[in-house]
Amino acid sequence: IAYKFPPEEQATLLEGIKRKALPEAATRHHRTVLLHERSRAAEAEGAQPQALQLAAKAHGAELGFAPGAVHYAALLRVGGRTKHAARALEASWRAAPHPDIAAAWAALFAEETPVEQVKQADRLAAANPDHVESHLAQARAALAARLWGEARRHLEALGAKLGDGAAPLSPRVCRMMAELEEAQHENMAATRAWLARAATTTALDPAWLCGACGGESAAWSAVCPHCRAFASLAWRVPGGSARLLPPGTR
Image (cartoon, rainbow, N blue to C red; front, side, top):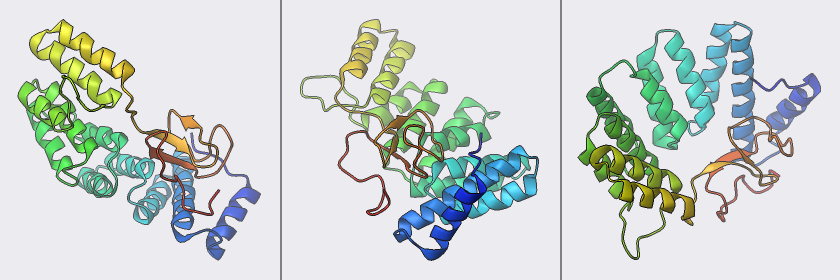
């Protein structure tokens, strides 16, 4: 559900963007989120052309904004413009890979065979080949296609190996290794070991975190559900030292 801005709140946001009251990166992000929410509202009202126009502007303003990329691609897909949707998702993957983009990409090719879907995952990953999310997307597609060796190759590229001195792995990687061990070898001992490692690892998966209050959200929203800060949610690993927002935006 799109966030419905009260008129006075939207006017304040627009005035701040116009005057560039925030640092450039924050100003751009605020504008992107506002365009994205206006697009979602237009879609909900059945105004598809307006929704698409606003989504295109949001996507162009910030390619690395995953919610905007997914929304824009969905509108393009509904309009029968699958190739344009794929190009939009590829551009965002190149800028900032995200699991929601990978899911939207997979949905574009859901009717293809599992092996063809592996090729499509490789195509997406080629836009950012060394990123963790690229290896995970490729491993997921390979698992679905029962290409065990290919799935293992991508997971092991992330350091997914059991043994003394093994580096901490995120829960997602551990769970995928558990799934692989069960599916390929029916090795329940190895499966349980990976699941135990997923539960005890010191590494964390990224999440939507608020740059104003630090609260974690299950999904992105324009306004933090904890402190109501606008455009404050960023995708990152909890506990990292990097700031979520540019200086001066809190």
